[in-house]
Figure (cartoon, rainbow over the protein chains, first blue to last red):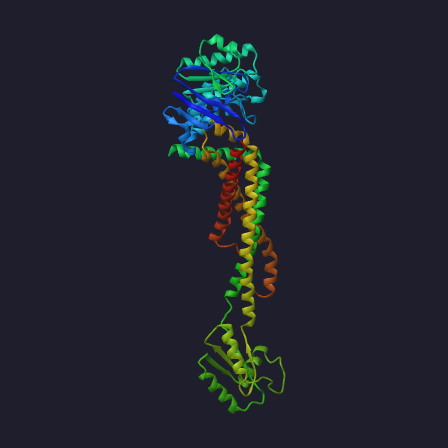
Length: 217
Length: 300
């Protein structure tokens, strides 16, 4: 369970990005974070994923208070999440297999077991045939799917995606959203930030709408 | 435990993979470190071998006292009595001019043909106190005795040699210190550059839950492997240099009827030649990674 209570975030030297945001997300839920560019969607996701800490307020992940967690404990909290970044953050100096392997290596899983899981993850996103391909040779949609494979390979209980369909054609976008729905079906909590109203309207899922850092719905 | 071994094996695999990828750069790095470690090692071998060579020479100082040629037998007996009474004198040996003359003629097999013995009567005085200042005081005291032509310290040259060896040992320490610092800088800089090139990987890894320890580990191993390669390269270079020098040294030593040759340092010194760069490699990369990670953290 994820619970925000009166959370505000301000970066040094910037305006307040989030103001008194409160909400909670139940396990297995699929939630959209909507809003225009600069409304604070990415910051909200970073606070959930514990890659940022709130300036004030409480962020509870499971039963852990992120603000009170020691810095050394943060990495272990982060491993509960599968992250799909706005800019993919794929590593272009290694092939698809090795990109997906990274979270497993961080968790200390290597060898045969890792190979099995990596292929399963690539299979789920339809990239099984491209194990050895370098990410730079993939299309935009394929790169996005590779990023999803990396996010899910360590079987996280919460999947967080920042504008996963941002730069994709409609056909690709639907495909990607299909993958997220499939994960929700098997019990994964899915949180997707998007500015695409069409996508949200189709899904009928819950929406957290941000306007200039404040939650409006 | 298995998990722990797994993590280290994985980091090592990663390091070897990267090094294979940049094989030439790695080899050059080993050579640079090998040369850096080799320099003080060569100096050590020289000092060590000279030490061994001079170790055979008696270092007990002696004062040779030569009497005036026209000294009366009475003054010689008086001096002998006086010398034996001195508490600073451990032993006195009298060598009469006749005995010395006989000895000289024996040694030279009669090659010196003089009709008159030119040698004076002499004493060999062994001082009780080996402190240079004390010996000098005793020497000047003897010099002032009646009938004494010259009181001479015999161990001066060996003292000079020892002083030079002492100086070389100090120079060696300074050199080790300076080059150790250079090694730290070389390794630190190399690792820093590697952190910069791995920057994206480090950032992503941190975002998805890598601990600092996980990120640091491969770089620490890289430092250790650089040090290990450098140490081994230094030993090989040293062996080559010693071999090369021994060809010439054997020739020179033969002229002095000696079988002196340079030898490899003792096993524990060889081990140190390998382990010191390993330790420096670890330390250098530890500092470099720590600083680079802190910089990445603050730039985010």
